[in-house]
Image (cartoon, rainbow, N blue to C red):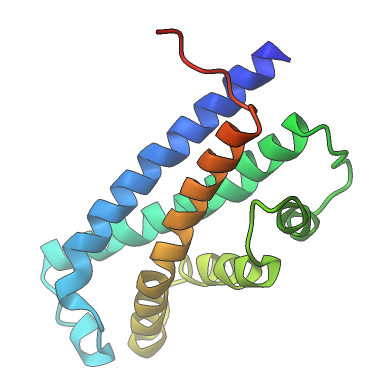
Length: 160
């Protein structure tokens, strides 16, 4: 079990690092929000790069939470997850009290999937604005998972 504790703690630390970078990217694109469709085609290279970094970090954090942290919590809580879809896993996280709403998480995952497909400016601007609006929920979820793991003793404390 100790090896799994270490892996879970590493995944949690990785999520916290991605979350910090996402929060930084959010601050850097804030002046551009709300992003209008006609403006998205006139962004400077620097502005475009800021938005790309923000979206990639948003996507990476969604992936880390759903792919590593949710499964890690389930494993550490000794919940059987064989054959579980990501949706099943999010419903388990809601049941355990880790996640406020599995439905809201499903919407966030759908947004994550949409944001990886470039298309016309109207839809792209809408996705950026929507991801920006959902970022605080995502960052708060990482904090909630950290608090849950700590309260449940799912991670070993660092030796002093």
